[in-house]
Structure formats: C-alpha cells, structure tokens
Image (cartoon, rainbow, N blue to C red; front, side, top):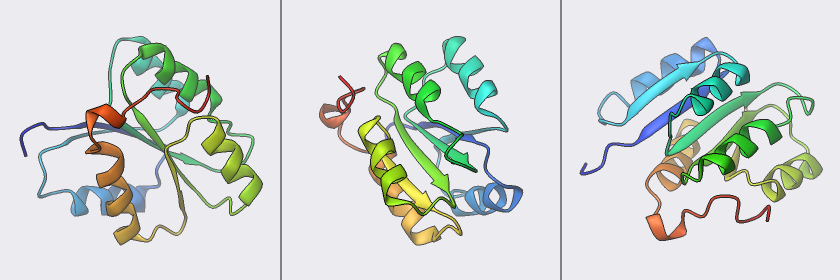
Length: 135
C-alpha cells in the first residue's frame, strides 16, 4: 500500500479491539486505540490527524457532535464512523446529517466493518470534504 493510513479507534470493546487487530494484521495502516472521547479530543487538540475515526458509542447521549466539531476544525479529511447498538433510524439520520461518514451496528458484522473501513480510509482525496453535510 502506497499511503499508510492513520486510524483512531475510540471506546471499542476488548473483543472488538482484538478482532480489529487480527483483521488488520496484514495491513500497514497505523491503528491507535483510546478508551474515551475525551482522550480522542485531546489527541485532536494536540495536533494529531487521522484518516478515519471509528467511535464506539453506548447511547444517544454520547453525542458525536464534539468529536465531529474537532474534526471539522482540523480541516483534515477525517471520516468518522460510529459503532453502536443503537438501532434507531432517527438517530442514524441525525448522525449522518451531523457529518458522520457511516454507522456500524453491534454486534459487528466483520465483513461489513472491513468494507466500511476501506471506504472510509481509502476513499479518493477529492471526495474527502470535511463537514460537507454540516455547513
């Protein structure tokens, strides 16, 4: 792979972390794991840039707005993908309108995860518009 991507995974379960490491053992992308949105925000505020952020959320109260705003402020083309058990169309649409790239339901279908990972991380640079949906 010519360009190794930098991917942040936030608040994924121990089993998901293990599976992700196993699935992506054969690629050279740089995977970084943190346990909380606050840690992710600190990394973004400290100058880190990511091609994609995969964020595990537990409830609709875990509003992705702060992370999405921090990504927009970076002006670096980062795709934010939510991983959640929240199977609610209204919440899903609200997240997409807010700038979330995609949404993965738990329990994770790992083929679907890999497909979305490929779309989020390796999309053409021309299509990487930060905050396009939330003007």
